[in-house]
Length: 195
Image (cartoon, rainbow, N blue to C red):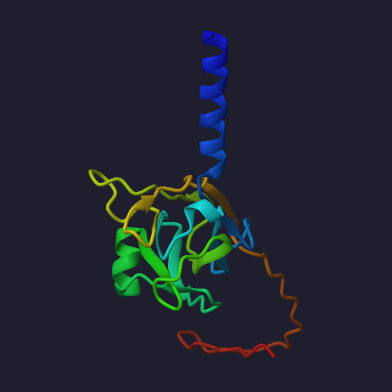
C-alpha cells in the first residue's frame, strides 16, 4: 500500500512540475568583441493550465562588462512587452532590468510559446560574464520573474540558467602604408589622412 501511495505521489509531483511555466534566455552572439552589440531574448513556455494576463521579467548583468542600449518592443499579439520604465542610465547603474508585459486585449489569458522581451547590450570590456535572472520572491525579489493569472494569483516560472557571454578584446587591424619622405621641422606636428 505504501508503494502505491508513494507511486501516486511521485506521479502527481512529476505532472505538476511538467505543467509549470518555463522561462529561458538566449543570446544572438555569445562571443562578441568589445563594442559589439548583442541581443538577449527572454522566452516563455506556458502550459494551457497556467495561462496568464501579465508577466514580470527580471535580468541582471555585470555593468562593468555589458551596457543596456535598447529594450526592443514586442508587439506581437496576444502579448505586448512593457520595458523597464527607468532611464537607460539608471538601469545600467543598477545592473538590473525590471521589465514586463501584458496580454492584449487586456485581461485575455494566453499560453504557449511566447517571447517576453528583447534587450540589446553593448560589450564594454573583455572577459567572461553572465546575464542572470531570478524568480519573484515577496521577501527578496519583488521584481523577479512571475506570471499573473486573470484571478490575480501568481505562477512562478522556472528560472533560466545563467547565460554565459565571452567578450573578446576586438579585432586586430593591420594597416600597410606607402609614405613618401616627409620633412617636418622640429617641434611641428604632421597629420596624415588614410584613405
